[in-house]
Every structure is written in structure tokens, then in C-alpha cells.
Image 1 (spheres, rainbow, N blue to C red):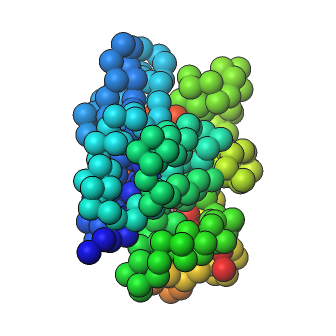
Image 2 (image 1 turned 60 degrees about the vertical axis):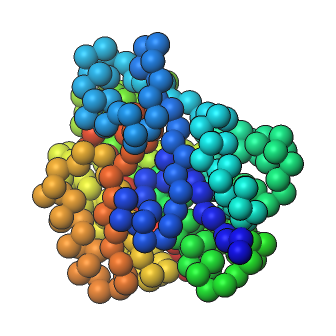
Amino acid sequence: MSKIRIVADSTCDLSPDLREKYDITIIPLCIVMEDKSYYDGEEITTDEIFEWSDTNRTTPKTSAVSYERALEIMKPFMDAGDEIIFFGISEQMSTTCNIIRLIAEDMEYPKLHVIDSMNLSTGIGLQILYAAELAADGKSATEIIERVEQRRGKVRASFVVETLTYLARGGRCTAVTALLANTLKLKPQIIVERGAMGVSKKFRGRQSSVIMKYARELEADLLMADPTCVFVTHAHCDDAIVKEVVDYLEGLDYFGKVYVTNAGGVISSHCGPGTLGILFYAN
């Protein structure tokens, strides 16, 4: 009997526990350091990425899912005649979704469906969990895709970076901007809207106080959000800071689940250590 398989690229940043619980299959993006490519989450750690980046004063390049690896992972599902729903990082940030579409075309497999999340990190993860719950409720692939895409614009994804150095190294902002921001201890809040990243606010001060200010400024939106769950996703943020944010969110007595996840290699490469985001669905 065929099944509905939910597949995503590694930028969804779901924890191993959540991937197992919801039976999510991950296809890794690639991280390129000098002349060698590594599969995100499989062949290299974020510790190694940060160490290499600081030693070489540059950021690794990241590239889309490889055609061969993606096909290798999905081929057993195709052979079984399963419906496959693939979630990819925003098409404005990567060609990953198009590679999966090409596989569907080459393999003449109409049961392989592609959803452009128009997001990143657990902004994708929220959509994946929603799809998994719909599948568990017996919804068809068509119904799942329709509902996920109808709700896609309600994802609220934002994060605060501790330093602009990594974004500058990756070409996301100029070196001058990064130098000025770091000198003035400015911490920008990055938001994702319509598939692209932009700066929403700029905070100043120590990262611990900045992150709590960021969290509290979200309170009105959080208390009008979908109460099912909220994500705290971070890249090597201090444990005490993460705990303070989690305690704050749990203290709202509003969300059924407060998930804590680590940013993977691709997201960490661009944002750098100390980054933390709060991600949820608006109602």
C-alpha cells in the first residue's frame, strides 16, 4: 500500500527527535570549503564550519541539493509508488526546489510534489509538521499541499544575529556595514518575508539582553499566534540565553509545545554563532 512521504532539505533544522516522530526524510544541501564539498548534517559539524571560517576569514559556500543524492534518497519511495511531498528552502535563496522538480520530470513521476516553503530554518519546519499532522489525519497529498500553501504566508520567521561578520563574509552585507555594526554593537533582527531576508529592527547591547528584548517585543504577536507550538532555533547560542527565552515562552502559558532546535550547517554558515530566532504560525 502506498504512503505519503514527507521529504525536506536539511535547512529545515528539525531536530532528530522531531524527524523521527513525524517520519521526515532529509536530503542534505552541500557545504563547500575550498575545493571539497560536504553533506550538511552528515559529513561536517557547525563547530568545524565556524573554526574553518574564522581561520580562513571567509564563509563556506553553500550549494543546492545534489541531483544524484536526492534521487538516491527518494528512489525507494518512487519504486513503492508513494506520494512524495518535498519541502525546500525559499526558491529566492536556492535552486533546490527546481532540482527536485527536474527529478520528477526525468523520472516521469507525477506523485513527486514540490512545495516552495518561501522560508528557511524552522520556518520550513513549521510547515512540515503541519503537513505531517494532516497526513496522520488521513488527508490526501492534494489536500495537504493545498492547505500548507494556503497557510504558508502566516509563518513568522525572524532571528537576531550576534555579529554581521558571517553575513558579510557570505556577501549578504558589505564589510563596511558589518564593521560599523560590530563596532557599535548593533544586532539586527532579520525577518523572512515573501521568501527573502530583510532587516526589521536593530538592537544594541550584549546579546543576552538583546535577545530577551527581541523576545518580549514579539509578545503581542506570540499571544495571537497558533498556540500549537513555537520554535526557538539557534546557532551555538549560550545555554543560559536559550533557557531564558524558553522560560519566557513557557511563562506565557500559551503554547502547547516550545521546541528548541539547533541551526544546521547551511543556516549557521551564513548567520554565525550566537544567532537565535523565534518562529511560529500567526493565526
